Length: 267
View (cartoon, rainbow, N blue to C red):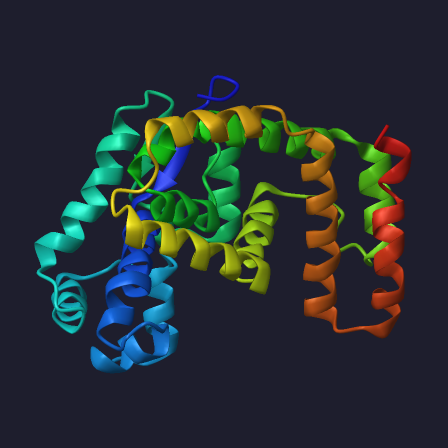
């Protein structure tokens, strides 16, 4: 529970992330370690398959059976892995599983989250799944500084005005759904993928993931992170997201100004 609101996890994100984890581990053992390879093996194109792993579409029973067969697993093995996380989430009174996000538009999700509690971005859901079910014990330590950073960004009107001027009104308002998109994009970068590989190597040695002592150590680390570090990440992400959409050399020059706009507020 953060600021009297539950931290919400999309069930589709959780199932999709579980399949990602199994593809990265079991899939590599059977020559199906990439999304494209596994998609081909179950008879669909990479685009629709990617939406399944990213929680954008619901994993049907048919897809579950075909994925399991390709990975040389039983469907129940996939569900048992997902259920470890479901049990860990339900054991934390501040967490809530939701099953309806995939049917909503981004703006509806954003409004819903603002009223009813913050949603864990898919990139972070995958991180928790990769680290193992015990990792959910540290969600408050990770999420609290993130929420604080976002709320301070959201309430800083001078900063909002600067961003709006710099990015041609694209950043006139930083919404929670924008933050989610930035986080998810980060988890597709080469740096994040290198981290994933290290975590996968850990899981090959310790299949059950983090131990309680690991969780305590990570809690201490995240509890002491300065929220300004998160704000800097938001700003870099905002600039990168704008450049990707606009593909403008002028905005490439202005990207530095976006970051400079934060400096007066970072003391």
